[in-house]
Image (cartoon, rainbow over all chains, first blue to last red; front, side):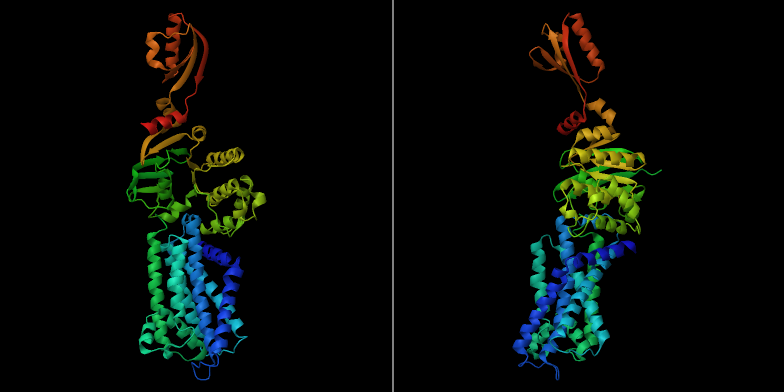
Length: 251
Length: 298
């Protein structure tokens, strides 16, 4: 296990060494969203009975920050290593493809959780948020970060430039997170857009994560969890197959 | 005893370019071996396939009997590769890089060997410096240290002295020679042919993805390299029988290209018989560059 552990530790150290950029910066950005949206909408929107809008917003923003940072961790590390050639340092040693996968996904989960915890704790300054089902919350947090960690690996394997990598981030990841119900409940949407939202796997992550806090959700948390788990398994399988084949890594 | 490296019928194509065309090569344990060839001959492709950085289209490669695909873990533990590109991870110090590299090879406590590597490669005072802030030559030393961190029995150096100063080149070769004496097999690609000639006991020359020569350095020199002889004559004339050996004339100086030193005796005897005096004689040693150029141009 030493090889896997070392790669995991190296990835943790990589983001920890630049924590202003990888932890503090996303926490501050997310808090700005919280500040602005809660100021504008606090008096106008009531999503769940007895839950004010700021409190409603906090779990969604926490999950959004976790997803985006979990994705950023594996994708930025791998695309940088590919572009500057330092990827050889992990391709030359006897690391198995599953060790590669596990280390990068675990490091993504770690960064997602650290950033999520930072946003959550800072959010308490703005509103008190209950925690009705902590295990549900944790299950969605772990699966969500792991899913995005795997997506980060796939994207960085595919991308052949920073431009392509940034396209995935800006045209796929950001829209999927913004349109997943972070800022609203999908119950407020028209039937058409509510139906469309159901095809966005990030919706189930936000909805299930929020259920962990409030005990209320747009869809059954068990159904959401099964969708998310299926997506995670499918993404993991895809990533493992790509890594095993050496896709764009071993020419 | 398994060969250090065994390569059989390896083919590799990149798009329309056939990079390797059925390469066969066997390198014995303990050899100091050079892989030479012009740019684009396929040297780096062959090394990349051997190291697992690229995949062969067909054929197989083994390191100490371990197939590089089927038994990749054993094969990669047996080989250390110094890549040609000057690559580094900007986030870490020299010592951190070496510790990570040790961990990837499942070495839990490797600090004694890391310290020895740092000392031997003149990196001891740079151990806690970020690799990104080192000079090119120093970065090259870090790459060598990284390749040796797991004490691989087979060491492959892909252009290790490209763009490095004389001092580093000499200290690097002294260190690599020591490793060779201790039993490590060394495979090297270089554009400095005098390095290959001085260091290596056997040489393979690649051209357009094929091995065009494979022999001991001495045999290659004997077979392909010509001895250049310059003679100043008095009177400055050349007997008819020596004209075929002449490859140039500069006033009273006649230049010959001879295959063997024995031919020189024939030249001198003919000159004596014709009563032509040798005023000045210069014999240049054959070198690998002649072999290289001859094979590349053929």
